[in-house]
Length: 62
Image 1 (tube, rainbow, N blue to C red):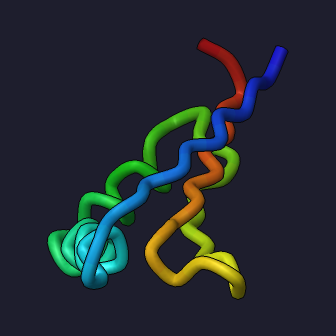
Image 2: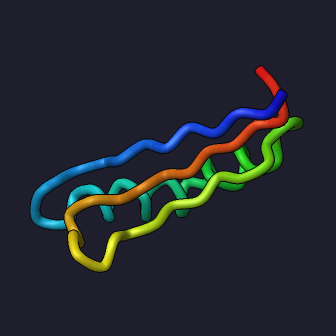
Image 3: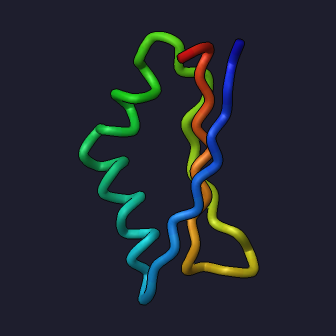
């Protein structure tokens, strides 16, 4: 059975967004997406709150 985890990262002065940029530039995001069983690993920034980032992380199974 698949499962999805939604995580909100909150910060100040753009720190949450900088965290995501570092995750992408360091290739950690790419590594996670390439792991067996990963269905989705994506970040989103809500239009109403630029200091928050949502991560949607889905896996085929545990």
